[in-house]
Length: 418
Image (cartoon, rainbow, N blue to C red; front, side, top):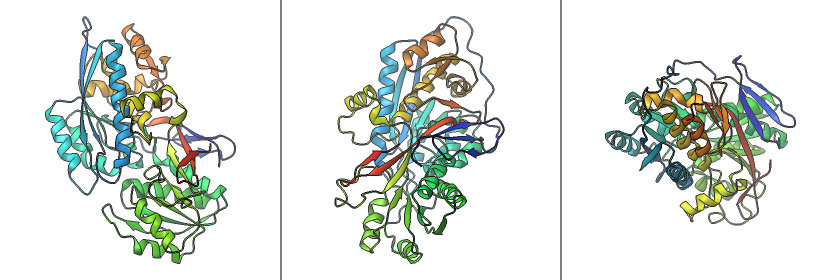
């Protein structure tokens, strides 16, 4: 499958895919939950400029640390654009580390941020990490907004309407990856999967899709975050004689890939958003030639001024994964605060679906300044950002998303092919 897969949520709660040309996926919100908060009424009386305090728990350390720089750059660029616009709201941001699930870094960071009276927290990147702090954040009446969580579990999580994400559920990525592998002619697939809500959820959907297309997953050994030796998993997969191996991991791929090659495996590898990045300085040339992977989001490299401006924030950026989703998360939070005329977390949450266009009406805007002006003029905005149309459903999930397909070159860098 070599086309962009676009997902749109349907009212009928059914799942349907068209697997030729451009695939359009009708996706339900899976299970309706009571997570949608009632709409807030903007404060009456004259409007005063708002000061919005937000925090971040993005990975400065741990197994997803490579995602931290682009995500934090996306946040910083959004804050700059919002503050430069001078349109009724100023954003102050506090950056903290999320770590990974082997530590309590995220809990410590969230406790600190809540003590600073933030209205919203952007993060975590890891679904497993978000699972450890979501109750702490939403229980405090604060918005949690992840730019990268893809676990299916969050769709119907009891979050009181306070959890949102710009990354699509792995229902979508699993379908795209499963069909990609099948379309490549693979019959027998091995999977090495991370044993957390992200890894098992993505592998489940990948397996369902691949086997529905006529293939067979012949082995799918698990490993836990923090493991550094994968001899058992590799032996189990290779014993099943797969035609290809999918790695549903985070940066454990840095160890698994050379171990697989060292064990004599020369076949194709498939990567996912948790490990799709530049390995040119890590592996010998040719290690990944022809291997492929999937990553939610538009092709950031083709977004021109956006990537140029990210590099002004952080000139050392080499990876732009989830930068656009992080940028849009901050912009949407600010627009929701403007629409509610409030920096209270629950008021912000009550307007997030509306400003994304999820209420079914609103005037289109593709930058903060024009979107904010629509609100200040008394209108309803429908913001479409660098990560795509977004358009939240009642569960806080984006109902429109693009999954990119990438292929590794001889130098172990990756290039978008759809």
